[in-house]
Length: 264
Image (cartoon, rainbow, N blue to C red; front, side, top):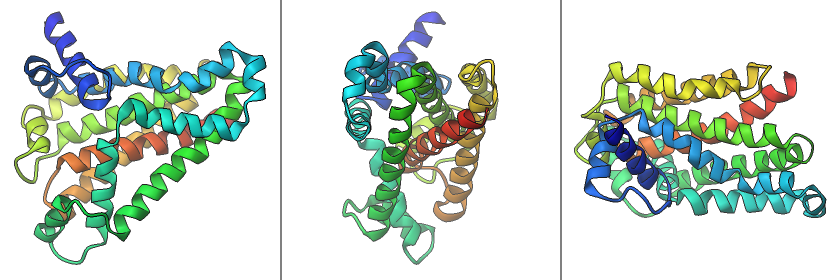
């Protein structure tokens, strides 16, 4: 069991990031049968993403000399260097599908079209702008509360992965492909394990619980919205839906987490 769990975690890291592990067939098979590996991978991935902010904490004197805007840009660039743009492509595809006129079949055709339309460009712009704007806040926060800044990034990443895993557990694929490869092996019963793995992020603002709870709640709302939209507009879940859920839940989670931390 432990060996399978480790293989699933390696597979999750290989699928959800550019970390050079988990690209074997055995890791992939273990991963797609283990939805709990998705939020579990959020912890190490989130720690990697927070490195630009942690640098300010490790070297505060040097960090103070680096403009906030520069740190924010470095954070965004580093994020996509670590995670890749595969999931961001899902945002673009769903943006195009969201604005097209027609039924579910027509929208699924748009998802397969590699060209970028106005809807996809707008969706990409909103996600990247949302990430860049909150990166500014995180860079400022890291100067006087570095542990909180790093913790919010990790918590939002785990919550985003939990949202993706929720869609995997509760969704049915619209057609054969990546979506069906994941959803076919999971079900609602697997959701309990996903929640257990993600639960520690509620302690990110300890002793205040509001930031962590707010981040998880926000991710849950994104997952519910993604499921509703996929079922009503596409006829089911696809790989693009999973990727977009991850990207949107991350951005929403960090924003909500920063707001909740400020209020707590």
